Length: 284
Image (cartoon, rainbow, N blue to C red; front, top):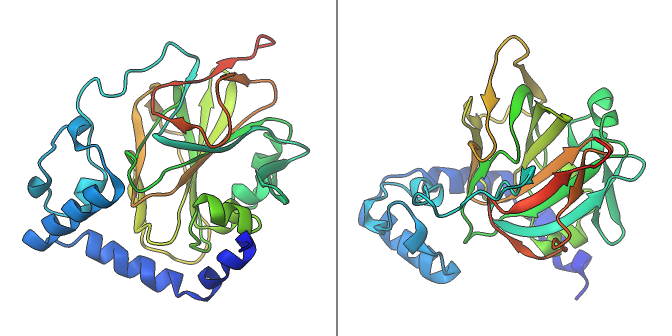
């Protein structure tokens, strides 16, 4: 079966309604039922609870609190690298942005401007830069950390569809990551601006950042923006910046000549938060 045919049912599903329902269920305090669902999930997806700060599944009052669980101290040591991987997951794609186009899968690309919600000036800063797309599966740790030190400049909520973001859907839905609902976080670093985008998906009840809290819901159906130019919200490398309430994808953008990716990185390779992602370009 072709990938496009495989994703056809997703066009027909009431994705918004399913996601809203899942969000309510994941936030419900249902006692033993909640524990039973968590235990089923751990078994189904082979979640490693041994590395959780709290491995007792019965102690989580909601599924969301389990899903965004903290890891025990030292579970993700930070590599001595200029840029570290911000999440646990797998590499979907990474590499050069070519003439403003980000590679999604064979036959599919989308623009930097589309990803950031239509801001052409912001998108233009990454036209010949670099990108990395990292997919978080249900079993993964779902907090997102800073790849390097950065000062927050802007946050943009972009409404959109709620397709799945698994590899099959990435191959079958054109412009997937610029179509789905997303939260675009713009930072300034010692090497210039960079963007860290949290991409929503079917059943992803919400996305949150440490400086704002839950960004969605509400889902107003229009672009919303928050500016932080007059504040000094600074986050250090490895510090938590946000989380997914149910899993999804992170897309990062960096300017031209800013970095060189880890030579061990390849598409589909599993990654862990804190491992070396890239070094600063020798030209910098």
